[in-house]
Image (cartoon, rainbow, N blue to C red; front, side, top):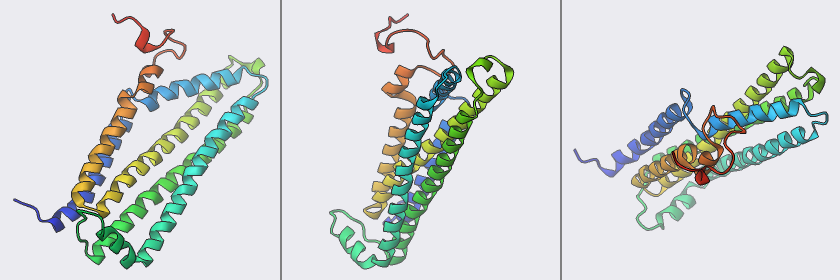
Length: 243
């Protein structure tokens, strides 16, 4: 059965949502060897190094840098949401601009508003993820300040505190990663304004980009696999002899 353009226009966003949800379940579920999983080991190593430092200014500076980066993206999400709301009030002008793009598909007024609302919803989701990540990194800063003195290193209470701090930092980073993923799929959703088949192609492209960065990127290879010692084999992975 051949689908007409209007049917594809309604099915394309379902493909986007399904692909996004499926990838999130695949990448975040279980204990897969991902870039994020490997970084959890490095956060735990960071907290262990922080434990033995008398002066923990460097740790608070790292946390402050992470908070600044997240604040930038959260502010950007608010600006994008405001711009999309403004587009709803200037529908005719915006539709005229899109209509001038070669191969752009004609869109009914009601469907146009659905497209804008979908994009706004994606960035609202990203904003909430960014702000929750921001709050959790603030908690990390407090936990760093509450770390016992180095003399208590090796005690059970210190071990629990270090693991707890690393876990909160990892959860904050996970929410930041999900918010960035929303940005990627939001950019794919932007192509829906031009043509529904372009949305399908952009969604597939975003899936490939996300998968490669989390599972096959050069950074992933350099950092090693989750569970390996952080100070494991010396030298770059691409310079080691193959077995």
